[in-house]
Image (cartoon, rainbow, N blue to C red; front, top):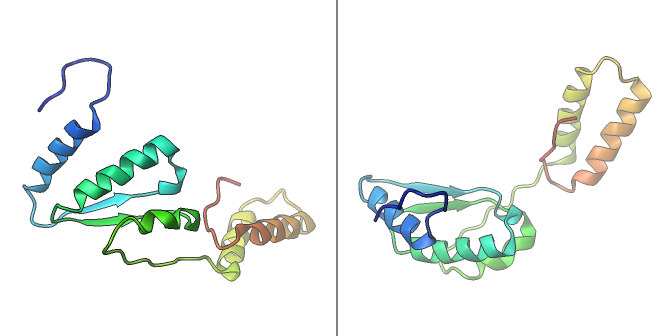
Length: 130
């Protein structure tokens, strides 16, 4: 069940066997797949295949993704969905706090930055470094 020493990555079935043996050692296991929407098509296919196999194990799975991958949910039977959206007031508060740390930005430019970010957030609260 091991991997031969080389620079290649183990195949998905090998990873799954190792994962299954690890799960058996714990009374409760939660697996998090974060940012599923950031995967390429090939990666997404592999992960969906893995999720199908994981469904037979006594574990809980949490997946985070943006709404455009909602079709993935339809491939599984017992799925609960929680939609989380940032409110404009939350985004505005966060941006104001970040901009307050930048002393060199004049008030008018701060307003422009804040308004643009809030206007383009569309409920997403993911911001790179400003």
